[in-house]
Image 1 (cartoon, rainbow, N blue to C red):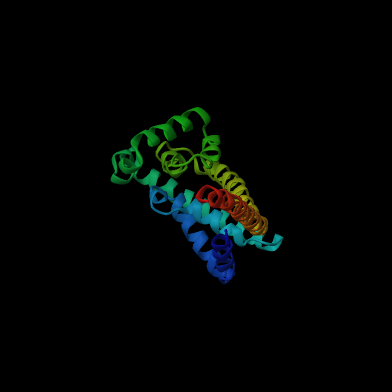
Image 2: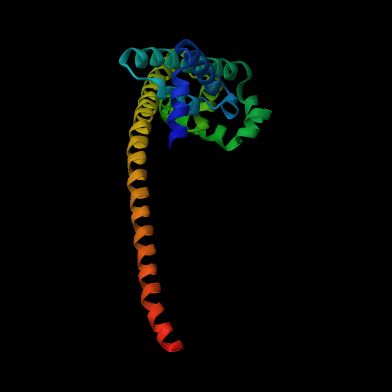
Length: 214
């Protein structure tokens, strides 16, 4: 467990602006059409969130991640407006899976702007919904509020999870280390007891062997 907390402490030791910049960049990339397949934005956010140890840090990261997520969505939206359904046959979408593009389009037809909000919490599909929304000509004035609401809720949830995980890792390590000392002590006691029993059996068997020889 020590390696985990060492890694978290190493991350926490980095300048906060650098952590925010990298997290924001990966979030923006993850939310832009198809780039989420390459950039692990969600994983990076969870890891970076382990450095959040105070309310001000939470608020700053929340703001940065939310803005970057909305910006990524908007880029995807305008790509959809520009290229339309031709994106379905693009190399990026084929790599992600055209069924996900179809699922995004179906979700938009059934839920409208609400689909943009709900898709934020759906892996892969959330990367394609903004572009699909642009391709389906969903008005930007309806798209943007849903994107902002989804980004704010999504980022708050993941930052909260990451922050809690970072605090829990240190607690688990302290408990684990204490338990290891107890287990080592028990192992030593058991080894001594077994050794003494074998010595007693050997000592008890020695006179019998001498009698048989005599």
